Amino acid sequence: MLVEFSLAPEGRRTRLRVTQTGLAAMPWSEAERRAYVEAHLAGWDVHLARLRDHLSPPYSAEVSVRVAALPKQVFPYLTDPARHGLWMGSEATLEPVPGGTYRVRMPDGVEAAGTFLRVEPPSGLAFTWGFAGPEVAEHVRHEAARGSPMPAGSTGSR
Image 1 (spheres, rainbow, N blue to C red):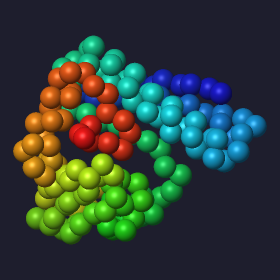
Image 2: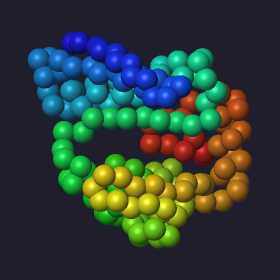
Image 3: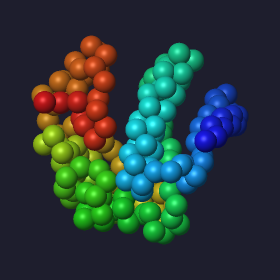
Image 4: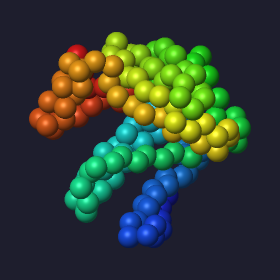
């Protein structure tokens, strides 16, 4: 396998991209390959977040992934409730128009809600995000302050 780091200036910041390739050559089943990728994506996210936090205050979060599909094929997974539930949360209410509803129930039962601000198929979208209930937000804030890691697909609440 090969791990590559690329650094690109963006104003007074740097975009750091990590690419790990060579998985197709590994003698694994498709399920093993997918499990490996998922585990390593989570690991890279943790390590890169530590690097980011070491170099700058963590007031925003950014994660990227390369998908083997065209933007027009990916975009519906961000806007269609049935497809959205396949990768994030267990159910969703989505009205993908500016001012429309964004509401997702996570597998642990917690809900996040917001409003679509920008919808530009197939190049991008933006929405506000917040926990649907002050007790959940307070619990997540408390867990984060304790340094508790949040498992993949979780809000960190119980």
